[in-house]
Length: 189
Image (cartoon, rainbow, N blue to C red):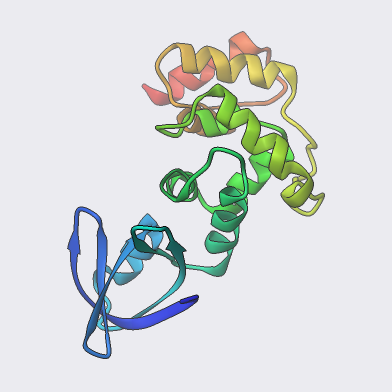
């Protein structure tokens, strides 16, 4: 297992980052945060995971151990391969994804390209016992039904789940769903 690589970024390809380690160029499919870290660095250290298949060896790179840990948990979910797991880990910081799992929020995962409703529900179901601990969940234990109604309304209006959550975060949670949607739309204008 190749767990970590430290080297010089030697270029980027459509498949990822080429990392020169001791004269050997490793092609690493990396998260956006790992790519940003490598962008202007003369030397970079990436946490890695080597996926071994019958016909290929593929390296996946992460900016921090929490990304790799979440990636490994996702690989344990039925029907999730390394490319989909990388897409999930690349979609948001690990703390946000762990929070969505703890809050049993499959809509957060459905916003990721390539993840449908059943796969999103499977991620939440299979990982909530492993990752859904109290320390991840903020003081408000779960989204209220009015919050979910407001979020779903914004999604119907063309917002992604992430954009809807961000827009609602800037509104008063004590307002009715309709008022929160109006406030979110006013703030966006």
